[in-house]
Length: 436
Image 1 (cartoon, rainbow, N blue to C red):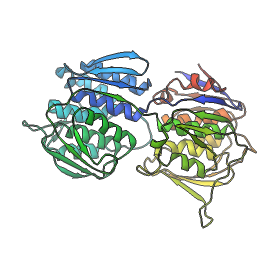
Image 2: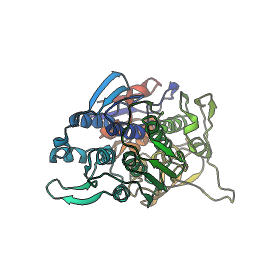
Image 3: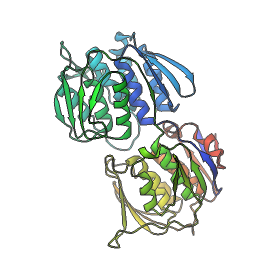
Image 4: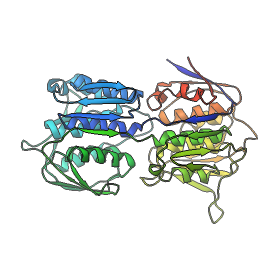
């Protein structure tokens, strides 16, 4: 198993550009299954999760053509329907978290799909109820296939039908799945309490280019006008907002000056202001974010003088994927902060590694941790650890880069799932990181 070896304490400098957004890539690539025409997608991140999805699509019969790095054409004109209904396919889906996003397209186009229990991060329970309930609102029936150990969704013989639905939660993947299924449903589908992240907006833009009318884009109330045939399209994936936030935090913790190029600032929402509340200075220059070197960054207090509370929330609130990074950054701030991870009950359990490195953190419960900043007076210590998930993995990597001494991080396949060639890219900034 590969590991990263990091010699900490080196300041960074230079420019870095974020990869294409992982979450958007999984959505728009899955949407290619809705049409028998070619779909051209650029700025595709060549990370492990995306590569696994591409292999799955190829095994299904999708023609995947790589023109250049991050530049692909997908042609789903002749799928292997026997394979799609096989036990082998369902088991393959169960090994990949992103496979959840092919359920809606397959159900809408071919009338049946299987819902395996998808793999991915070990960060707590992720419900699939929102997906299933939404697809059943469109007329699908649900049963359990004992042989394949998976749920089976079946559309009526005359196809899915548009309906009104109020989602029980603003699930991003649930919203994406329902939107994709609704594109080939008869009539209009109204989705209330829909997720409205930029990546959902991007999915809607691509589907619009494919011939679907979608009202309310950017809001939590969507109306999808179903059609009988989708065309091909050309689409470019946004930069990954989680990488942008990770680089901001990396610069601060390492007291370094870096520039994040082509960050698509208009699609970052509250992320820059959230880092500013931790005392991090940054400047927007065109579409770049410039982070100067700071010896000290002081956390804001609330207007009444109480401790700052940083919590995740559905868009346009703060994405939960950045809380791990913000927690690590806070370990060397001046002041204290309460990190409240509402969505996943196991995502803060990686703090024991940071405590072993010398951080002062009190884990209140599975969802909340109080971080007491050390103000760079007591640097973190190098440590041997393992990456439990994608976001904790990058947070531990950032911590190791600032630590005194050498750190080793195992299970880096989790990091590779979400960050493309991160060791090479960080070395270009001056980091001392090696893959063993």
